[in-house]
Picture 1 (tube, rainbow, N blue to C red):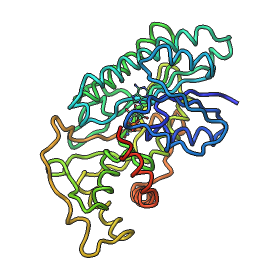
Picture 2: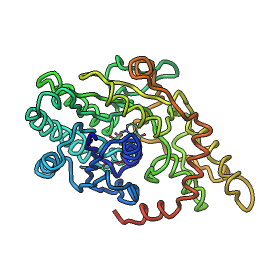
Picture 3: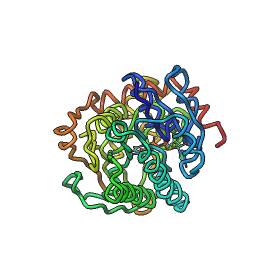
Length: 339
Ligand code: NAD
């Protein structure tokens, strides 16, 4: 049985990835600082092949101890400050966590990898989970792919780009076998309710305004988190060292249309006493430097890794809304944890 070490395991994508890896027969060690975005409740009931270590990716001693104790066959870095709005408020935290934290992981991973036996060394991977936001913003046409130049615009995307460049440097300079994945916007269960979809669902249910930036015309490409996680696992198992792979949902929506879709699903699953949830939509001042459009060409991942998607957006949104309706106690716990 192979052991993988997953940083950021208590976050949205991390906890979904842990579930998938356990179901595929891996032993998983989670490593997470349990910031406001990380919650043990998202990892309840995972069984004996899962261990959670509480630690910060910037803390060399804590991460070094986790490596020495658990001897992983691969390290996957999901840990990050991940919310663009927070990066505009507190950019230096994003530099510290995303850039310096990643450099710390690479430094210790290299030391660990150098000490492995020949077979383990050959098969080892350091996988960096990154975002399509490193490519900047598209106009009304075109798509990002693996060859698109990096052109980040927000402190969040700039810090993720800095991290990606560190990964590239460790691969080229020290031959550390790295793989980087870059994905579009994720949705699905266990997403902290500050991000667009769960935030809108919570506001709708609480009778609050549904805040849409600007005129709601910015376009995002949405992928179900389970499809993203399946792509990451493929990149881990089949990705070529030094490569990067893009994953998308092939499902572009203007933000306003997405919120309309959510309202229609809620109208059906949890009708208001009168009228539609659409009546709660309220336009608010646009985000500073708001990227216009993201879209991904993931044909390389399809060809080289066999990447496919199980979920299409309409069905995925419906099952996601249902999940939040059925897991109100999880939402209350994570929102009320006071972190
Ligand atoms: P998240 O904010 O839900 O979770 C981040 C996790 O990292 C949390 O559990 C948090 O406690 C942990 N963490 C934060 N700082 C840490 C530190 N210093 N040390 C250890 N742990 C720390 O984020 P997410 O949405 O699950 O995103 C996971 C990764 O995927 C991130 O790297 C993000 O950039 C990337 N990504 C996210 C999306 C998306 O749509 N959510 C899309 C593409 C890529």
